[in-house]
Amino acid sequence: MAYTLAFLSGDGGVGKTTLCAALGARLAAAGRKALVIDCCAGFRRLDMALGMESRVLFDAADAASGVCGSARAVARDSTRTLPDLLAAPFDADVHPDEDLWARMLSELKARYDWIAFDAPAGTGVWPMLPARLADRAYIVLTPDDGSMRCAGRVLDKLRAEGHDRAQPPSLVVNKSDLALIEENLQYPPDVVARTLDARVAGVVPEDGSLRLAYARASLDGLDPRSTTVMELDALARRTMGAPVPKGWELARPGSTRSRLRLPWAGKPSLKEVWT
Ligand SMILES: Nc1ncnc2c1ncn2[C@@H]1O[C@H](COP(=O)(O)OP(=O)(O)OP(=O)(O)O)[C@@H](O)[C@H]1O
Ligand SMILES: [Mg+2]
Image (cartoon, rainbow, N blue to C red; front, side):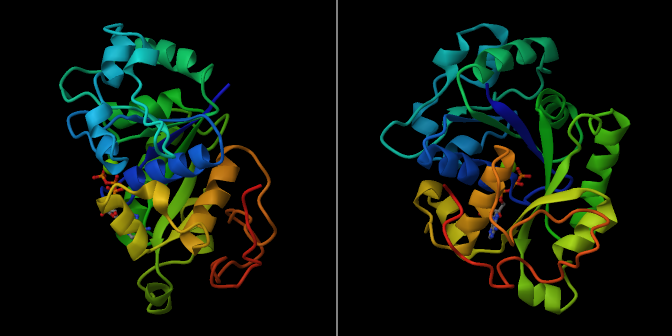
């Protein structure tokens, strides 16, 4: 039975689509049955990030509303190490029926190990749909004042709706840059966790090769020895509930242990984190 995640954010462009696609590719490469569902209705992008746009015949709204079965609506690329994909509907004006989506999701959960929703930024109808359906919400942010304030608004909304009760939302800090942290233009993960009173589930560095892989739709071709991929793998393991190696633990709010140094700056044992 799949574990389900929703990648949300306050401000746009923080890396939800990139992380959703790259994590899906890492899980697919590890032999897990992974599915990503694009909820950016009207602004489909995840299919392009995966280089799968020519494989899309139906979309998630078709599957939810019964235009076709959910198995038929899923796009697959068996020639590459990619997750399966349900594309976003192009019409954002037709609001999703939460009950129909929940029924579709329960069908899909039986066929996958891991399902992630890529949501649009903000707290509108479309981002709140996966937030309500998924087991856990991951709020992606960059570690600066503006993005943290926006992430805080999403957290407030989720908490107001009671989403924090079973599995509290976690933060994924993206585009973390040591030079900017040293210049006091970005915050280290422990400060982000404390400020927003939420767990940090992962910290992904600012990485030109990730940007390039996204632009080239080759996120399944990332260097497996790179720090970025190790962080992605540690995050993927956490999302599957698997243990992560020592030194890669989560930053927790209220932690007494200072994590002013980032895991990859503190030279942890860079052994393979995927088993
Ligand atoms: N860790 C990273 N290092 C460098 N560039 C990154 C990183 N993560 C994402 N990017 C780049 O940031 C840009 C925005 O990423 P992406 O489209 O994934 O953001 P998003 O949150 O999905 O945006 P939107 O809110 O518009 O849906 C892309 O060019 C992507 O390649
Ligand atoms: Mg996106």
